[in-house]
Image (cartoon, rainbow, N blue to C red; front, side, top):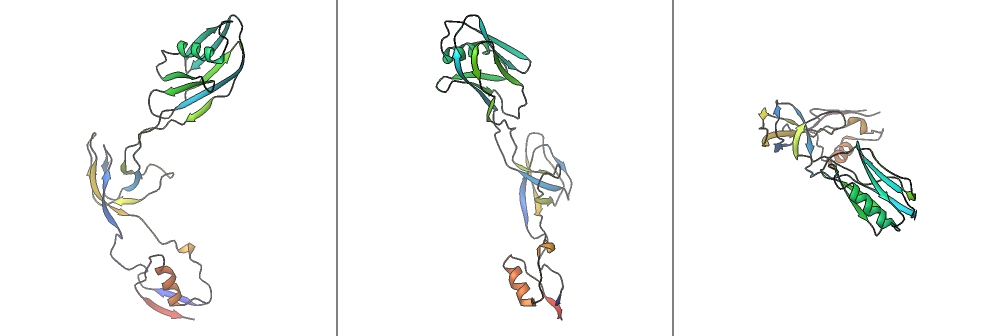
Length: 223
């Protein structure tokens, strides 16, 4: 099988790519810190809904909405003859909730709860009734998400993708981002290269050049 030997596999100055990037607020980083990029986001407010159907009006019934530790009881009776009327009673009962805004989608027969603040949410929410009324499972219409500050930050764990390393120490203020030079990370994944018995130096150089990888020079080619 043919063997190729190379002197200095990748030619050129190092680091290959250097750029000035935004470093997030309240950071005290040392040269060589591995960085990841956070894409700025305003976050999202969690939004849930319950579909109500198959309602039969009757006297002295209740619909109970529980949001975390808070419980809101709507009293409904024979005069509440529609799902829309039931929704209105629940909305009124839960008007004072501090975490969620509760509204009625009367067109689609849904009780809608939207968080008052952006962020991930794990609040236990249930809707129960003593009436003849079908209540669907809670639907997560919008997943709550925390706001994200854009910029470059030190890698937190293996779930994040490293994109570069810091070339100079930097300390940013608690309320203001800063800027520093970063070198982009990168490597040639040699395990991904499959070399058969019929290759030659030109074949290797051409195939790697197509991927923007260039060899400085071939030292030897021997059978």
